[in-house]
Length: 281
Length: 261
Ligand SMILES: Nc1ncnc2c1ncn2[C@@H]1O[C@H](COP(=O)(O)OP(=O)(O)OP(=O)(O)O)[C@@H](O)[C@H]1O
Ligand SMILES: [Mg+2]
Image (cartoon, rainbow over all chains, first blue to last red; front, top):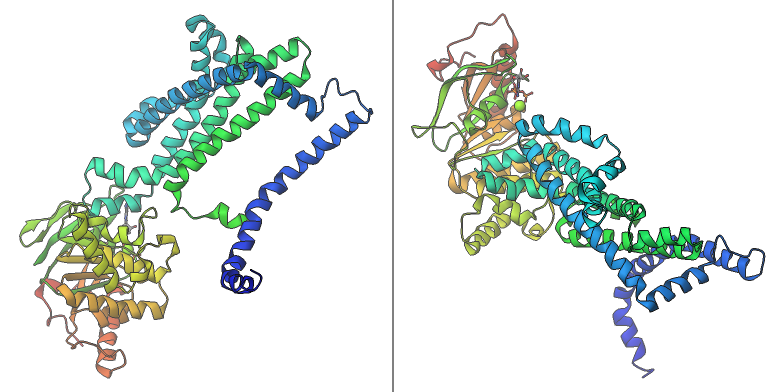
């Protein structure tokens, strides 16, 4: 065994040498980002554990995770997560569909833009939470008003993103389509869609971020389940660990859904100048 | 034959870019258009390509009027204008969408081979040098085998060495199917090395000033005295076109009349 080890090593050496830096950086980079929160958490844990603070208002990580585990065991956690995800999902879907449609119409058709855009911009100037009383009056205090609020939050960045992206498509590249005599639909499919895609993905991610923001608002206003309800419940019953638990889960879900969009769109955007990636390495 | 009959263009902002430009270009002829900046060369080329309509006058290709982009007319711009989301091979095949996939792949592979970029087939446009990208643009325009290829300062963004290389390469490709080439350039050297005939334009409003036949065999030696002579006559004509005291000659009388040296 020992005798053929050098041979093996020799053959795999160049490959390994090439793979090593990238493997190192691939794992080391996220690690660096985690370092600071980890130190803070451990530090606080130590402070509470050694008795310098009782940790009643700011519970140590162990207590937060114990709360999460407790909620998970009783099945409560899943119920709340499902309720919140459902609301975000539906609101996001409605907001994206409306924003994409209207944004595309305004971007593509200048008459529609002149008719539509001033109104949308005026509505955008209204802080979205100002709609809450009206939505509750119109749609009731249950799911519909919450989903409507989230959809409104998602709508504006998507609308703006799509319209702006279409307006800024390079005229020179559109001319290439004209030279090859693309029909209207072919022009949209072969030129406009791919050209708009990067900006569209960005607007989806911004929209999703706002969706998460608005679901908290919607659930704080009145809900019997959902992560926002856990927040409110924690406040009213004086359970800071539960509040922190809900916050941690919000953070995880927000990051996770954002990552899903990023990963889902990555294969379609491989052609882009890898500016961000180049900077990282 | 490509026939331009009194083509005029006034832009909506009132700029009179082109005035009664007439010329007849034989199938397979290489014509260079040269002239001061802003004298309407790009405007003329865009009218031939059917990208912009002339205000008056007609462009006809084999007696078919051109008012919008035509399958038999291709164009290469100053910039490669590759689609950044398509690989090099897909860019070259962009105009062949109507062909069956296997036939398209064959043609693209042959074109890639022809422009010396076979190893770049799967590269993204951003991974190409300026000269390589312009080669891809040339291949994309030539692969549908147009009868007329228009070129608007296609090599002006490249360094002198790459430019020469691509000029020779263009002639090489031209020899395959002998399309009509209409080339706008600022480079007298380029005009004389490529063209059978040089049209000199004069600005404000853009109009034909002079034409010079380049009676030189190919391949042309850029250092021969004859080549220098032709360059000198084009340069002199250019200078005179910019001199307002020189009256317009009637360029429609055809070549020969214009050879005043
Ligand atoms: N889209 C446009 N709208 C209004 N005026 C234009 C437009 N395009 C060109 N012009 C004007 O028409 C005239 C001719 O322009 P053109 O681009 O055809 O010149 P050119 O000979 O190609 O110049 P250059 O050698 O600098 O490329 C110029 O005076 C220019 O300002
Ligand atoms: Mg020009």
